[in-house]
Image 1 (cartoon, rainbow, N blue to C red):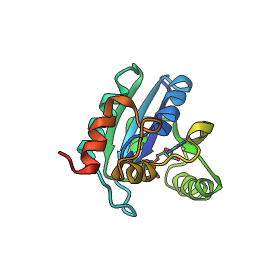
Image 2 (tube, protein in one colour; image 1 turned 90 degrees about the vertical axis):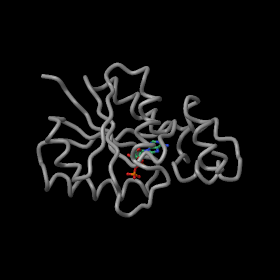
Image 3 (cartoon, protein in one colour; image 1 turned 135 degrees about the vertical axis):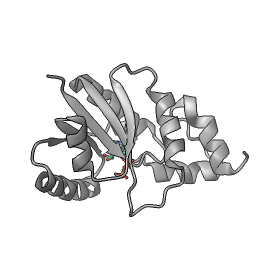
Image 4 (cartoon, protein in one colour; image 1 turned 60 degrees about the vertical axis):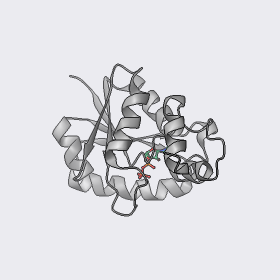
Length: 162
Ligand code: ADP
């Protein structure tokens, strides 16, 4: 049986921290699906289509990673695609509390899958999409944080030079 994992998030935009988690998940599972979800608590900078476009470009080298978007519950999506796990990255204790709660809720909604947490790589410990956006808006160098293929487009979009 094919073991499928889902990597959910807002990916607003996708960073090297996300990519590191996706890459590591792709070695643990037969197939990984990166799914862009709308988080009602956040107002996104990039539209879902823009986010999917960036994801498409950075995922090209992976042959067992796909991407998708979903506007319902993650627990339902996992069932729909027949995944056995959700993979999430953990940066800090603050991530843990939220993720712990989400996992318990997801288990209530669908007890048939596991949430697997991968510890962040040290280089990406302080990296988040929102920090990247702040740095880029003030013309800071985001080369350490954003994959090269999409960097220029993100800077253009955030600095309003388009
Ligand atoms: P959310 O809207 O759930 O915060 P994000 O797009 O910010 O979604 O992140 C999606 C997933 O990627 C989460 O599991 C998050 O913990 C993980 N992640 C984001 N940045 C990093 C990073 N620098 N290192 C490890 N994991 C990360």
